[in-house]
Image 1 (tube, rainbow, N blue to C red):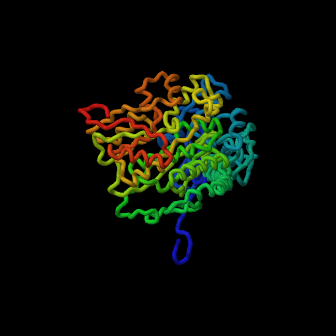
Image 2: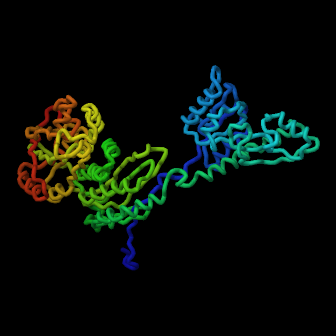
Image 3: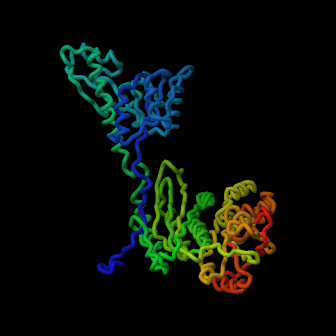
Length: 557
């Protein structure tokens, strides 16, 4: 708090829906000629007058100059000649629609397009396709180019111009969007009138696109609900506040999360900051399918903070990133409550996060998670250090598969003709397959911190993707190797995975944690005290996996 005002100096979570920033309107163009009216639109997109971008230019003529304008916009713009040879009108229009949709087009401009469109096309793009006509519709509807200008002169009309209208099945009969007017002089010719009208077509297109942009800039129109985001913040506030610890108050609502190192007992000149980031991987797919979201947040925290303690540090705070196509407030709240529970288990504050609602990025019902954790360690206590021959390897049990290997796990469930609602074949008490697989990753912070504080560990290894064989060597100097003599039998879930997959022991140990989630490297004379401290924290089972021995040459570690 500020000593003078008593106000909190902490600013925390979040910009809900910030990820759904106002996106540019994606424009596709159909044209058969030079595309002169497109030039002002291109310029307006480039200079920011239009919050839009041209993403596709399609023509029915291979040598149409409008295609060159598309190519000039760069390789990211789809520029394509679509041949009509052998195709019905409907088939040709379907080909064009396929190209436009493939490029992500949201709004179509007809710029000198010399084809009559099919009902299928106009129905599909209803309200999202506009054309320019060289007269003040409804006058001279159905006419084209020079014949329209000549008809205006022959009728002795005092005004002409251009009309931007929505495209419907009725030729030139759609709702009028914009009209631009020019005066017809006494000595006007069809050629001079065309030049005057054509000069207005580009600005008319720009005005029409601006109107469209104004109707698509709100979050709600883009499929993003700010109200839902605000509701989520209110729902998760109690869970986040429950993660308060010295150094932060885990409040929500600001632009960034602050942490006071001094309040947490660290002096800046003696402290190393550690960062870790991770996700939950395809384990999330099981949560999506079963609609059970309460525990994946614990997984997210575990995968980050377990990596932090391997460096000898204490996790201080955590931030999360939740991205989805459409925000389901209750679903997201369940996930964040799980994150808060993980933070409580790890003793770190949940001080911020981002909830991004992005309709074009995720399928309905899908979401993804990422986590970011920061910890601290005194400079002289960074691990690993002094790891040597004779050190003992202690293994702490995993709670299950944790959060790695789930692409294979899901394949094995399919191979066994099971689904996530099936009775669990490896654990009758677990309920369903989904329930068992969603058991959250164990967090090892509180059981390891007492040993770190007493400087009893020379190193640790978090057993994640790559298993024991890939992760333990990351904490060993090149002069030693692990001699594993006391690995426990495979827990039932891993025995089932082994039997179903046909993997041998070596491949199992480099794919799954196989029952060991964390390895502690301890000096031989400190083993008994280390086990006693672990038991005090609730670790009733501690495995003596083996010892470190001298490594000869390029032997595996």
